[in-house]
Amino acid sequence: MGERGGWAVTPSNYTVQVAVGGVAEKPRYVDGELEPRDVLSLTVTVDHDVVDGADAARFADRFVELVEDAHGLPAVAE
Image (cartoon, rainbow, N blue to C red; front, side, top):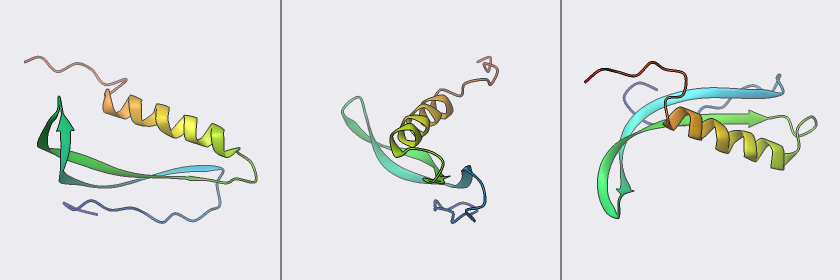
């Protein structure tokens, strides 16, 4: 995807797939103010014959939280 945001279309041969798209600068509210932010596009594909939609939604929500918090990455010294 390069320097643009975007969504991926994945083949549906797995139960759960995560495809990483590009990063694009988009407006987001931060503390009530509109600011430009880099936004990563992710696509989560789920086989609903295997996984219930509610479970898939909870997985996607938690996955986003972990990515936004940079969970598992070492802290950068400033």
